[in-house]
Amino acid sequence: VIGTPLGGFVLDKMQSTDHESNLLTRAPNNVITTNSHLAKIGELIYWSSLIGTILLCLLYFITSRGLYLAIVTIGCSCLFATTSAISLGIMLSVPIDSRSFAVGLST
Image 1 (cartoon, helix red, strand yellow):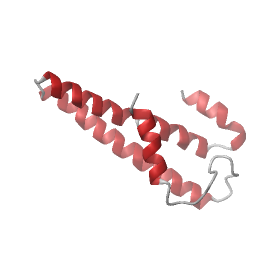
Image 2 (cartoon, rainbow, N blue to C red):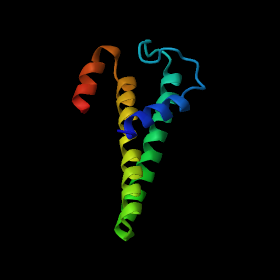
Image 3 (spheres, helix red, strand yellow):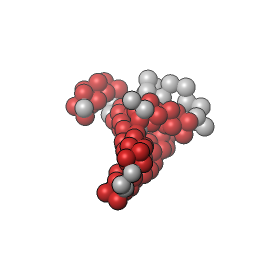
Image 4 (cartoon, rainbow, N blue to C red):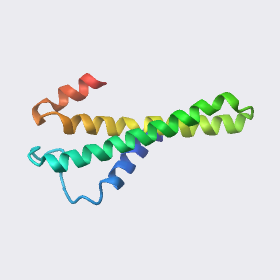
């Protein structure tokens, strides 16, 4: 419930320095801008996956119930934060006419 909106929020904050108003509806003519957005998306996916995986691997060593539940919540939220970035990356990587098919195929 927390992870996916959190990933979208973080992605918006990462890309707020760019002043492209409507990234998904414009034609992908500017390859440099699209590549910079994809690089930021990849960075969010990498760090969220890394942090979530490390936290979930630490569960093996935890004996406290409260700490266990807290780490499961934070670790899963980090992993679920990647879903919005993955969907946006798919939409930026394919032509506008094929976006609905590409997103449907990826889910």
